Length: 76
Image (cartoon, rainbow, N blue to C red; front, side, top):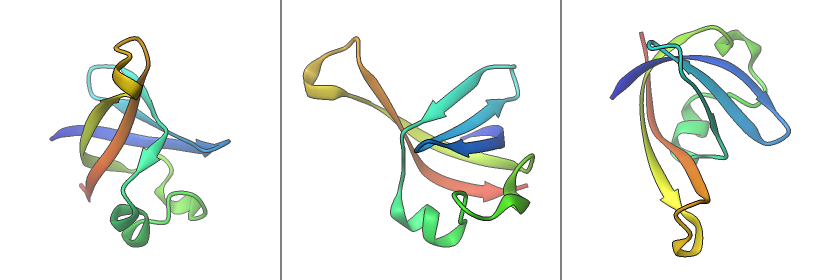
């Protein structure tokens, strides 16, 4: 788990900024997480800090194409 701030949801992508200054864009969020936190529509989550767990999926065994998926979020 890492600490990150939710910055935006635009055009199907979820953007988080991490404590080390890194920005990651997630294409997928586990449906359970979206049911708990409506990141797509609820603007009150913007600029909120979370403990985030995510995985990297390699698309069709192509190590050059990575999809990041949020597995869990816990507000701080």
